[in-house]
Image (cartoon, rainbow, N blue to C red; front, side, top):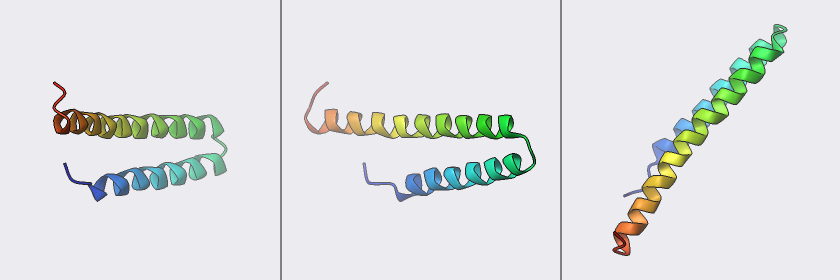
Length: 67
């Protein structure tokens, strides 16, 4: 398992996109929708990070022969 730099760019890109959508919605007066978009973006990123943490733990188990 090598370090995948693409994962960092995916998370950063998701943050930039969510921030832009949040700003546009907030400036148009739809603060409720802006908050929902931010919350959904955070949840999606947390699922992505949880997947990578699961892969990390699987690799640790494999390296130390815990089955």
